[in-house]
Image 1 (tube, helix red, strand yellow):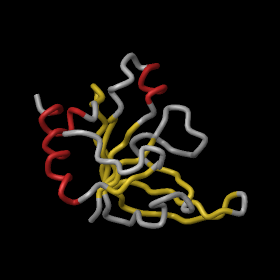
Image 2 (image 1 turned 45 degrees about the horizontal axis):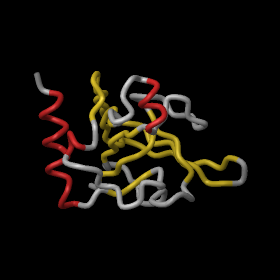
Image 3 (image 1 turned 90 degrees about the vertical axis):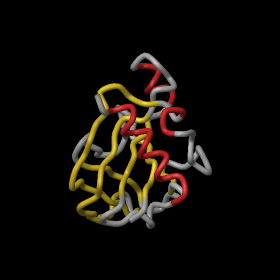
Image 4 (image 1 turned 45 degrees about the vertical axis):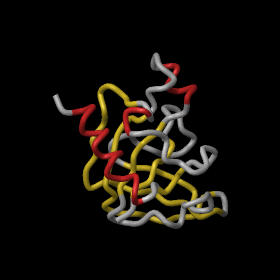
Length: 131
């Protein structure tokens, strides 16, 4: 099982459905690494977060992938990951809340989280969402 931070904006050009599925082109960095059983942590852009009131509150939820469907769109391979479970955060989190930004390239739409960072990130998610 791997953990990824993936971009999911409010007005995405893809067929994302918050809480249900994540649509991505397989040609992007890490697009072929995501697999059934992996966990996605959702991050939105600073501009989308700014529209919601705070450009730093960008972490919106977490999900575990149950199924991945592959298809061709505009002659490119795409995938839709559907979830076994999803937890959306009522109050979005900052990267500071989860111990910092674990992405190795902030330009990538999906980033593999280093295994040594996963425990701290999960603790940050729990700490901020347990009442």
